[in-house]
Image (cartoon, rainbow, N blue to C red):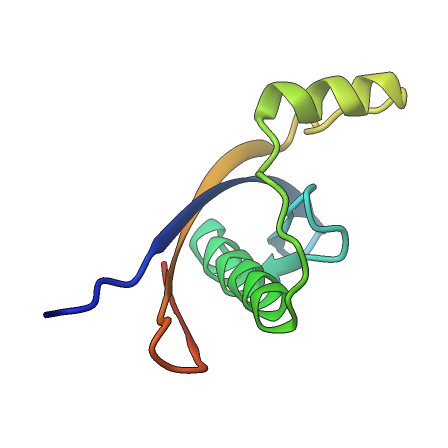
Length: 116
């Protein structure tokens, strides 16, 4: 009998902003549900790859350490939270991106496999 590992799918809100200097344009991103989970990149594609990698590392760390992972916040919930604090979730230069992370928990071993 083949053992099927449970899968967990999380979709997180990522805020991406564009920054310009006289010499170049670059992008920054953060995951509001995980303060400190940030990324920078020279292109939108690069920053999205980096933030997804960072988010997977944060989630993997939580799983390995037995730290509770709360359900991801919705755009609406985050927008309300920021408005209550007198701030905007995303600037006029930015955008919201939803990033999905799939975790396959390998119950038969001690390691955790992460797939995006």
